[in-house]
Length: 138
Length: 386
Image 1 (cartoon, chains in turn orange, green):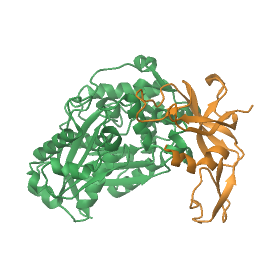
Image 2 (image 1 turned 30 degrees about the vertical axis):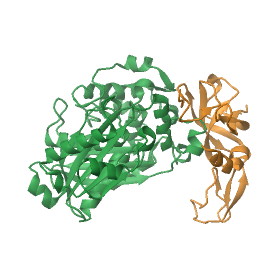
Image 3 (image 1 turned 90 degrees about the vertical axis):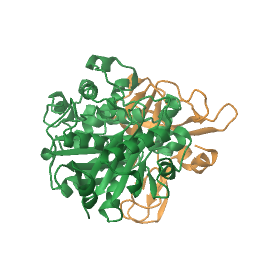
Image 4 (image 1 turned 180 degrees about the vertical axis):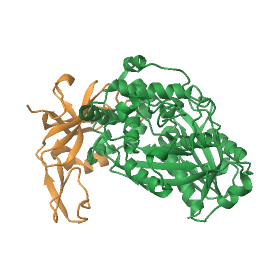
C-alpha cells in the first residue's frame, strides 16, 4: 500500500473505526458506504471495542516475500506467524494476525483482543505502517 | 439467445517455459484453435482474452489489443477479461454471450498467463491482489493462508482430514500422466504430500497448484457457423456466473463458496440437468481443499461429506463422478488466465472422445472456474447434442 492509501485508513487501522447504518443499525468493519442489508446511504462512524473470538486460523510458514525488495513492502512479522479470521463481539469479522503466543496455544473459539502494532516497514528510510493485531485474552 | 458451439481448441504445454513470452504463448494457442476448427483466422470477428495480471507478472497491460495485433487480426474488437483466477472462464462466458446475443458468428475465447518471469515470492504477492489488499493481504494473508483457513474450519466442523485432501492431489497427478500438456507428469503418493513443505497449516506444498506459464484458446461458433465449419461441434448447454464478497471473512459461511453454489444453480437450470446427469467435471483445485469444497458446492455430495466422498474413490477416473481428468490445476498447471479455457478444452476432448488414456463415457461435461477465495465463480456445462 502507498502512503496515501495507508493515511486514508488511519481511523480503521489505529482505532477500529467502522460504520453503523442509521436506518437498520447494521454494523460494518471495514466501513462501507452503502448498507448491504437495507440499501441506505446514511452510515455513521462506529468504534469497535476490539474484542472477539477466533473463527478459523492458520500458521503461515511461507509468507509474501520479495528477495530483491523491489515489488513489495517488508512485513513487520516473524516467521511463522498466526493468521486468523476474528469475529468481533459486535458482529463483523476481520482478518488479522494473532501475536504474543505460540502457535500451539491458538484454537478455534478462543477469545482475543486487539493490540496496536507495527504492520509494515517501507524500507529502512520509509514510513512505518501501524495498525491492529490481536492477542489471546483468556 | 442463440445456440453456441465450440468448434476448435488449442493450448500450449503448461509449465516453466523460460524461452517463451506472453505473446508467443497466446498466439500459439489461438493459431492451434483456429487450425483445429478449420477456420481461416481472417474469419474471426472478435476476441475475448482472459488474463489476471499482465501488469504485475510482465509489466504489460492493454492485453486485448496486443492479442489481436500479434494474431494478425487487424482492427477486430478484442477485449481483455479479468476476474483473477476465473479470468479464463469469464472470457469464455463473454464470448458465449457475444455469439448468443447475435452480435458475431465466430469468436475466439482465450486465456494466458506468464508467471515465471518474477520470483516465487513476488508471484505469491501478485496472486494476493485477488484478495482484499487493505483488509486481507496487508494483514498478512497469502492465498495458501486463506485456503488454509477454509481447510481448518472444514476439518473442525466436518472431520475432513489432511489425508483426504492429499488424495485429491494424488489422483490429479495420476490423471495428468495421460495429459501431454500437463506441467507435472509424475505420480506422487499420499505420504509424499503429507511430508511436503508446510506452507500454511494444514496446507502443504503438494496441496497447492503450481506457478505456471501457458495459454489456451477455443473457437466459438453460432449454429450457422458451426454447421458450416465443424463435423464435431461441442455445444455450450449452460453458462453460470456469480459473485460473492471479496474478503473471505465476510462470507456467510467460510466453508461454502456461495458463488459456486449460485453459478451452478444457474447452469443446472439453463441446461435442465442435475448433478447426477454430469459425467465428468473439471473443478478449480487451486488447493486440494478447494476441490473438496467444489464437489460439495456443485452438488455432487452433501456439504461436509466431500472428504469421505473422495476417500471412497468417487472422484477417480472410473468413479461415480470423475473429477479433473486433465490433472486439474494441481498437476496440469495453473497459468491463471489460461486455466478456465484449458478446463473447457478438457470438456471438449472428453465429449469428442479424444481424451486419450483418460477417456470417460461422457454425455455432459462441466467446468468450474473460481476467482480469489470464491468472490467469482463461473460454471459451464457442455454436451454433444444441440
